[in-house]
Image 1 (cartoon, rainbow, N blue to C red):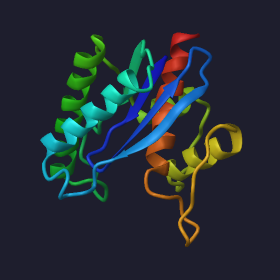
Image 2 (cartoon, one colour):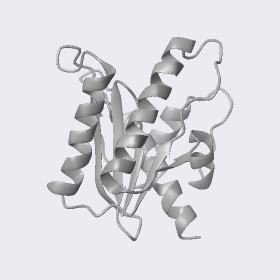
Image 3 (tube, one colour):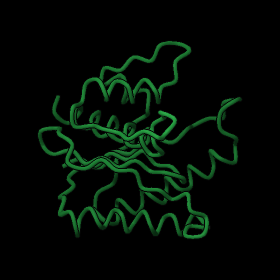
Image 4 (tube, rainbow, N blue to C red):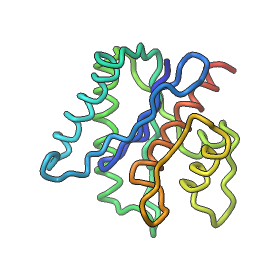
Length: 176
């Protein structure tokens, strides 16, 4: 089985694919509650509990772990330098926890590389997260989302979609 992660300090998407590349688990782990998770370390502890749940409760035997590579450079108009550094720290902690839990280091895949491997083209001016979500809703019958009363995808939908793309790109690479 393959675990794909879209790591974020607010909501982390996690997808497990079976040996045939089919979804067996696709969830969003929500760390936004500042009372429950006031620091990066409490968020990391909850991440570890979620990861252990995959193994201990769900009984998923994870053979490979793929994590979306964190941003490598500052881009004006996007995330601030502070946000990029915080995300990189959390990504490092999460990567360590994955290696510690499953006794194998994760592999990293850039978001644009994963989209390309999965056959997703983002046209100029389009938002990649929306393109990915719509692609999955059109092409992947087992991928479903809920909507808010205003018709928007519920929080975590984009994170789940991105984690699926990371997992699927990893699966394609392993099986090509």
